[in-house]
Amino acid sequence: MIRRAKKHNPEAILVACGCYAQVAPEEVSKIEEVNLIIGTKDRANIVNIVENYSASKGTESCVSDIMLEREFEELTVESLSDRQRAYLKIQEGCDRFCTYCIIPFARGPVRSRSIQSIAEEAQRLSENGYKEIVLAGIHVASYGKDLGDINLVSVLKKIHEIDGIKRIRFSSVEPTVITNDFINALKAMPKVCEHFHLSLQSGCDNTLKRMNRRYTAAEYENAVNLLRENFPDVGITTDIIVGFPGETDEDFKESMAFAKRMKLSKIHVFPYSPKVGTKAALFKDQIPEKIKHERAALMGETGEKLQIDFLKGFIGRELEVLYEEEKDGVFSGHASNYINVRTKSRKNIINEIFKVKIKDIDSFSLISEEI
Ligand code: SF4
Image (cartoon, rainbow, N blue to C red; front, side, top):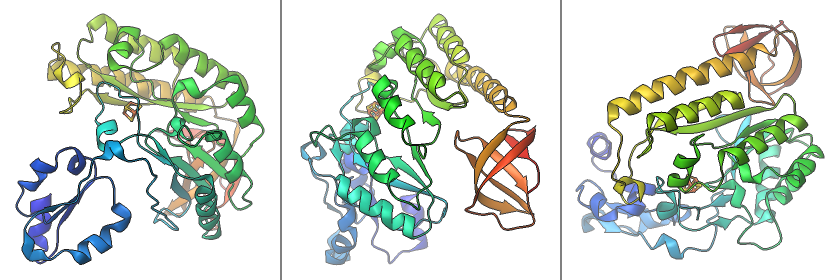
């Protein structure tokens, strides 16, 4: 891609930035088309860095040791091309060190954005017409651990006060966050969507342990039960890795049976892919690609069946939908629990929220009555 970019724009100053540039600057510097290497820090300063760079100097690396970083780098966003949902980054970094993941090395330790700065950005996004905010970060559940007495709930409360914001979502949280106190706090904030992306990664305790995930399948199940008891229509989506080193056929079957039992509303399946620099890449018992892909197909089928079962449960019922796009007079958007709903309408209902009656299912969407 770098070579292609330079070919299209031979006069351009080419900057490599992001995770790979952070963890492997020497490798990236071998690509002669690259002029500047910036890792996962200093992105806010990228224009100045490029302006100060003289193209004749060859490759210059500005990558510093991300593990020493303690400050959240402010990168503000006021509008995005997707006008109905804005992603608001509240934290950076992760110190969980799951054995398959390069992120702690690429993004460094947890740095939380100040609540003041989050509130200001949410206010600006609201003034620019956004009704839904997704709280994003590398490990959102760790928000506040470097700031003292504030946590994710403090952020939710602050954004919940903003009039124009009608919905708040999380990008992903760990099951260990779902406690009685957390649920009680959410119940007092109706703008928080009934959708939780709870990373499972495996439903087998042996595999979870080798992954260094810090929960068991039973703890995950408790979190799911707690959510369902309190939010009966909740959508619980997840990520599952198949073919992790050492995953036996029995481990895989256990993981799949667990996913079925949890009745997850959507599963993103990833065949394990080793990342250089992680512990799991060095594990001896790597799984052949063929088996990984067979397992991915089986888990994918299971996920699709679960998704359809979840969707069918809403036929004949009403859902509140925020409409996001239109094609040929059919508008589509998402319900609070992240179900995709399509609705015919003669009016322009983009960026509007309507309660609609669901009459049918088509593929992985629900179809409502015309409005
Ligand atoms: S998988 Fe998530 S929690 Fe684990 S190390 Fe990577 S970013 Fe952190």
